Length: 185
Ligand code: SF4
Image 1 (cartoon, rainbow, N blue to C red):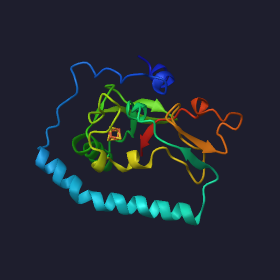
Image 2: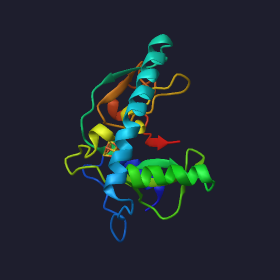
Image 3: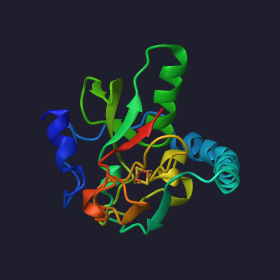
């Protein structure tokens, strides 16, 4: 299936997409390494999040986030990871696949918003739409939906959040939101 078709239905899907052909790949890194590293990284993630909140209080973005998560899990169906073949890019990929449990849904990277990206699924997404590693979820999941200081809100259709003022400007219906996916840059 083409990326365009996947994204078209991402907001309205009533169940997660099927696993990739051959199933969800196993993580080769031992569990004790993965979880102990995530424990160590957690305070840094929380500090980063806190600093971002403070910055938001000091310089308010033009759009305000309203509403609440409906716990549908749709924003976890497809997560985009920036493609890069250099060492940093490879380590980045390793971190998100081996430590955070993402796996490629498509073999080849795709062009999304003009950039080459991997289309990933998340092994921690539960059938009921909840997160199986909620306390240790990565920063991108804690920040979602993104209300940028410079730019427009990134809110997946029907997720329960909306922006104030509405974006696109002509609609205040959350189902008419800006259908963007989580992007790990
Ligand atoms: S880590 Fe949790 S919140 Fe993030 S994509 Fe996976 S299931 Fe969703």
